[in-house]
Each structure stands twice: as structure tokens, then as C-alpha cells.
Amino acid sequence: MHTAARFFHRPAGTAPLAESDPRFRVAAARRMLARAGCESGIGGHVSMRAEDGASFWTTPLEYFDETTPASVMRFDLDGRLLSGDHDVSPAVEFHCALYRARPDVGCVIHLHSHFASVVAATGEPIGMYNVGSVVLFDEQAFLADDGTRPPVEGHRVIEALGTRSVLMVKNHGAIVVGPDLEHTTGLAMLLEASARYHVEVRAAGGSEIPLAEVRRGQGSYRRIVVPRLWTSHYRRLARTDADLFTWVEP
Image (cartoon, rainbow, N blue to C red):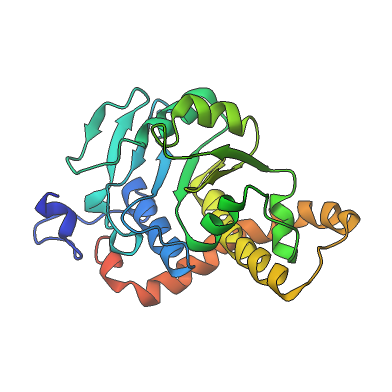
């Protein structure tokens, strides 16, 4: 990996970025996800559609909690690198496919986080074992990855996901899509938390929330809770990840 990907502080002579800069926002999302228990090793991706609609920003093979704006690259929807020069997973192909097929998608997050991966391996959807789980109701699709084919091929991801927002990939992890970076980051956090409830409540012998209450609560959680997860975690990030904030204007 190129030396630039290793910078944890803004190099001397590098102009500061605005907090609205997509490179900073993608790096911040990955840091927040890591802090929320959604670390994915050096795999996994956070991507965000660029303002032109015909390209997207994403990151190389590295831990979520070490990402800085220096790592963030830009690709067109055919997978051609437009800016940046770091190592990237070939799985970036399915991001291209999703952005081409789903104009409603502004962000794609691919996780190998622990509990989401455990539940995905069972072939079952995450159950409604916690109030936050209701955002996932009727939003989960499923794709098997038995290791015999290239992982998460774009055409298979599109076909399996359809119009839903969560794809559980057996023996692999999960893919979360949404209208923008903030919403999708919050949804990914709730996915991992809900997967943990699923595993632990099942082991404890608990039961799911009644269906009527799931349907009743889903709208309010999407409208009220998911958007606030970004702002709340962003405030905490400013305290815990000072090295990231050396990249932005004072």
C-alpha cells in the first residue's frame, strides 16, 4: 500500500478540507462504524455516490478505524479509477453495479462485522428481538456465498437485493444501501446491534416483538432514530479521533 494511505495526520503543506468534503465524510463514517462495533478487518467498504451521480468515493483495503481522507478514492460507474492510487478490493465491482441499477442509492456499505456475519451464516433473517430491529423488517434479502464463485458478484447482488436495503450474504457478511451516507451508516449500526440481539436473545430463549408493534414502530425509527445516529456518533468521534479532525479546517 502506498505511503499516503498510512498518514494518520494531515501532512505538512496539505490544504485542510471542509467537513462537507466527501473524502472526510467517508473516512468519518468508517471511523464511526468501527467505534460502533462494525469493524470488518481490512475488508469491507464504505462508498458514497459523488455529486455528479456518475462516480463514487470509496476506500482501500485497511481497517475502518485507520481511514483518513488520504485513503479515499474516486471511481466511475464502470470501475475506472478517477483519483487516488491505493490498493482496493475487486469487490468494488458490486458498488458500480448497484449505483448503475439503483438510482435511489446514494451509499453502499459492505460489512464483515461479527454478529451480522454470524446471523448471515445461518441463512435466516435477523429477528425482531429489539426495538431498533424494526427498521430491518421486510428489508432483508439473502445471497449464498459458498466460496465456489467470485464473492458478491454485481449481477447477483442486484438480483438478490431487489428494492430492499439489506443483503445478508451467507458465510460472508452483509451489504447495506440507502439514500445517503448518514442514513446508511445509521442503518448499518442498527444492523450489527440487531444481529447481536438476535444471537443472544435466541440463546437466552427470548421471543420477538409482536408483528403489529414492529409495523407500528418501523416508520418512527426510520424517521427519528436513524438520522440522529449520525449526528450523535459524529459528536463522539470529535472527542475520540482527534487525528481525523486534523484534516479539516479549524
